[in-house]
Structure formats: C-alpha cells, structure tokens
Amino acid sequence: MPLNERLMEILCCPACKESLEEKEDRLVCRGCRRAYPIRDGIPVMLIDEATIEGKPQEAE
Ligand SMILES: [Zn+2]
Image: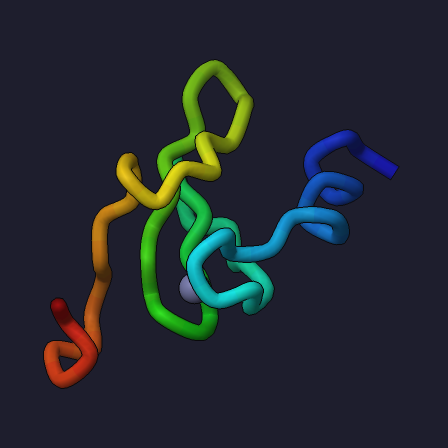
C-alpha cells in the first residue's frame, strides 16, 4: 500500500477528529471542512495552517 494511503488511515482532523479526504494538494476534513496543506508530500496537520472550505454556514 502506498505511504499516502497508510497515512490517510492514521490521520484524522486535529480539530474535530473526523477523517480526511485528499483533494489535490491538501487534506480536507469531512467534519469541519478544514483544509490542511500538503507540503513536499507531507500533510501539515496544524489547525493554525488550515483553511476552511465550502459550507458557508459552518465558516468561522
Ligand atoms: Zn475537522
């Protein structure tokens, strides 16, 4: 199994503990819609680095 798929099984959102969905160059949380950047192939799982995607009613 590729490293990235293994990572996806382990990683969850640090903000709400939901699972993540890979989207181009970032990982998007299925719960709070935070998008975590992937830099040099490594997901940056920091709430401070995340941006919020979609669902305007859940925006901060
Ligand atoms: Zn989340």
